[in-house]
Amino acid sequence: MNEAYNLLINEKEKFLGFYKFRFPVFHKSNVFYRDIVYCVKYYLGSRNLTLKDKILEKTTQDFIKHLETSGILNYMSPKTWLLNYPEFSTVTPVPGAEAGVQN
Image (cartoon, rainbow, N blue to C red; front, top):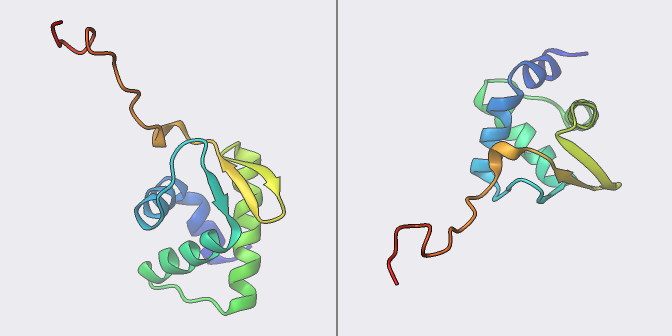
């Protein structure tokens, strides 16, 4: 593998935080291939790494396979995955009585 791939693997939590900052994603939301490619490009750029398009595509594909193996991405279709990352869960609204609101 290459330096960029190793960086993504070693900093996957940082990458996912960067991804969430750039794109509105949440636990159990759909993630699209092109969004991942652009985010990998921008993340690596922020780390002073620039890849040519073919290498960027290959690195992204390998990284997606790693995220699938890790259980973070669940395959749905050739260009779509389901994000399985509970850290990105939204807060469930609490009914009024449990939130301290008196009737």
